[in-house]
Image (cartoon, rainbow over all chains, first blue to last red):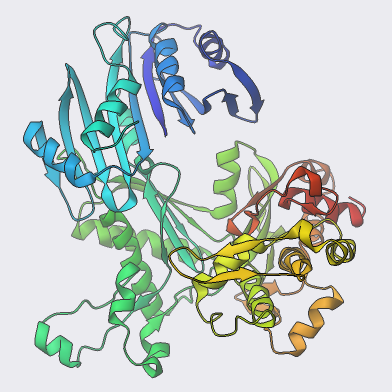
Length: 173
Length: 381
């Protein structure tokens, strides 16, 4: 799995080291090479900080080769520091894309289809997920917002969302 | 949340125009792009199929090409490979129309259905030796595409080695980009140092050529015309020797240590080297340094020898080994910069994607980066 996480913050202390320390409290750190931070279960890279005005900073980071538990902990670490963050996650998967397409067609707020892809906005429990599927490439991408304090309680975790999507597509995680 | 940042998170798109392959895909597609051959086919509009079934496309690109191929004697005029060593002739309109078609193919392939989509943030890359007019023409192509269908919100075009340096966040380095058709050695100090670029007319395609000869010697002559078979054999068998002569000597004495059985999935075809496992080292060595006398017999037998070729104002050297090419490129740069350049060498491209040999054989077989260090050390760097 790979993807990006973006969020905004007014906390002037948030920088790469600050975020990494937060993540390291939940995930075991292995090594750093250039801009890549290797953890057990995934790699984080490409930290970017965009100062929009004197108060707000937008932050983005990429993760690659991520396992589900790593992703859960990554989101947990970030949402412990900021009010909300947006996750865009891509997985290469052997699910039955036709099953997924049938399901989202019937159960979605919105569905669209082109020659090589289909897109949809669906709800998994109370969480709104936008997804794009490229069946020929066997790629499924979804994005979702996570709020501070909701994870594991009122809101599904990334791994639960992934498992739910895989289940719809006829695959065990 | 900032709309632009969120939009970019979903809709950044990469296009890499390689000599042989066009790689493309949005950031939401993950780490593996889609890949098609950089070529286009101009179907015969006078054919019976055209008259029977109506309009055929002007240019066919991508996976559909094999379905349209007709008589082989037509191929040279109808099947167009637009790039020669990463460069397109300025006035070759057929070639440019193929580039436009593959660009449109790539963008439209991944066009999402979401109504919020207003075009991709496109980052395209060209060979480091691509002249300025190629950049200008490509921007013009993107404008034409966007005038027809809203696919591009913004576009930028950068040299391929710069894309590698940006990805690694290293501003001073030498990027050695080796693809299917050729290899570029490009020193970078904030931006590619164009006058220092060394281009080599040797790439993964040449590794395929030596693999083909090896397979012929092993008795697979009837299969070597199938490129997928040759590529599979190359990827499964190829090993890079620490020292070619020592590796061959060791492998001849201990053939079982380098045993490799290659099975082509979905077929009954398998490759067994038996006692000839030493040939595996020829494949890896040929990529890095084709000058060893052992390769002379292959050239004599008719294997194409990488030639020096002039494209525009750049000479692509055929037989230059990779170590020498790095030294030549760096020595074209200011003396004060040279130590900084040697410190960071980035290997990029499919031709450097060799499997890491097992630890137990590390005295004999090495990976690509170790081989590069050894080549440089041999020359005093």
